[in-house]
Image 1 (cartoon, rainbow, N blue to C red):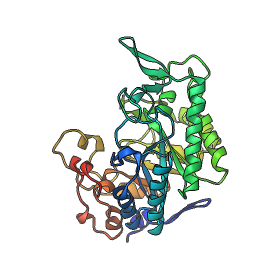
Image 2 (cartoon, rainbow, N blue to C red):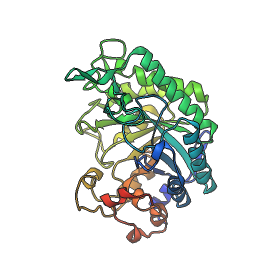
Image 3 (cartoon, helix red, strand yellow):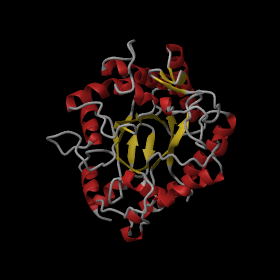
Image 4 (cartoon, rainbow, N blue to C red):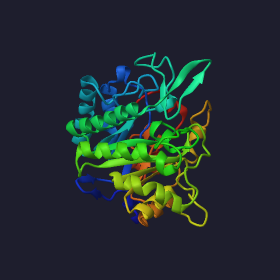
Length: 369
């Protein structure tokens, strides 16, 4: 094993969280949990990654216990005895292989559409109301709604701790509810939750504080954020390192232990004048550990392979990524599609068998392996 590859397989420790490697499984919606309950296929899907060198698994997005949290069929939930019992089996399987696992706690916000399970009559909930032909398609979230959503996240975190999860990740990225509050394009509020970015961050700060209060001072909280949105890939919350620091510090102070910095291409600099990517800047500005992510292990940006196409993503060289990890630009590396298609991706990298890594195509999304 070269010194650069060795950096990816060194242990990571943060308080009580000890990871055997720096490889993280990125959260990826799979939609293989009918009724919202993880089944035997889901258990085996995560177990295989833990058995093959993944240090930390971040689950696919799991919906919190709020009536409008879900936006898609067959995604797992993180509330209810049946779903939590399913997740307990996942936890036990991952731990038996020496891995660690956290759920990604998720509320889709205004992305939800009428007709979606579990209650088809419930519209999306977002920072601002939207009407179409006189029908409320997005319910403008009230302060009482805010309190209920925050309580649902806090309860989910408490339940994660109770069933043995090793921490939680709060989904604050990609144009879902928490991010909808951050983003001026979706947050048109005129109260204390709207206006300046500091005000638009209030919802997330209160949510993080509530989760921290629910789980105590030592339980790991990861926060995922992004500049880009699924509604606008060119969207930017901040344009300078100074503004990024002003945005992140209150989140850090509220209780975030690790920032998961979502980009579409990890190799791109975040700001002019520096080679640092978003995770690199976040680590430098907050002093907190960071996870980098964005088409790791693919020979192109992942979204081009997600549309209706025959394109296949070939495995990519990792030297540039590993050099940055070795220099401590970031602490952990999240792998998405490359790990989705090949559960043995990490051990193949570790053992110098890159030629054996399976290529990614859209077909891989059709089944759990």
